[in-house]
Length: 399
Image (tube, rainbow, N blue to C red):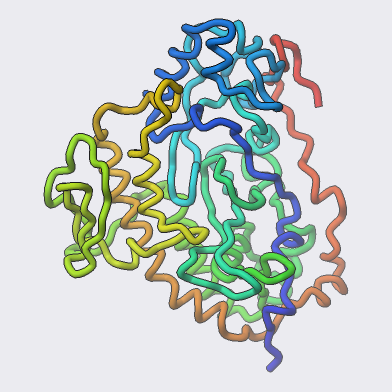
């Protein structure tokens, strides 16, 4: 029986052809782990004028307080030049700031060097953003380096690779898949896969190659079902929407010793399977959760550092919570759970990615079927315009 090799697998760039560069904030202060700090930072900014406001703002070539930019799609930020702005800031929104790190952002294009409005236009409760996160070099999969793809229901602003929305339009309309792909897979599998099925399979089996992320495809219904099951579990854990994930009783992490009001250090006791935040203690924490990396960085350490590293004195980034919020403890317990459960899926992923898949669907076959190459229009954003979008100084935004 012919089997597919990873050197003869379609590329993600062809299967999900529309991609956008990740947003570039240009300054750190418009994002934070808590929304209250963002409102306080904005208030501190608008209380200043002239050169003091510009110094706090941290101008770049892309953005200064005099920049004329429009409102972000679907948001309520102002459109007058920031130099004249007053009143409250736009309501902060939840974003994926770093791998597995959900934070808050002021959704105001005047504060962001490259906000990527095309992503905001298609962001809604049904959208899934896929982010190329690395995870290996030279075509080798390093499972310890983390998954090569991240999926999120939130707008991703992390510094990573290309962002690929699952849908090209709001309301889960027009999947961002190569035209004809699902139809061809349906003919091979004997049943029609949904766009989420294709994404789930992709999440489970994608791996880096020298040419880009490869996605081996199969026409074997049993193998496909196994991959989709693993991938849907991964999507659920990474998106964290709906029912909260839980570890079985006896393995669930709890706060065993109260966390201090301002923890400064984090350590892991491997023998006790305990996470130590100064004198605070959380256990059990599986070693797989502590060792979980994304992009070669330990996720839990990065998450903790984002909440404890002080901002530069005299800057807006220095405005932070005085004490550790209870909400952060709840988020930490959930993050430990998510990482542990994702780590449990690695053997199933390895079985899919490291073994040759039966009944391959190769790039040559997709070319013969007319699925590849994708038409140029599929690589461009759809024409989506919210009639309420405003340009600079309240003018109508035109595309």
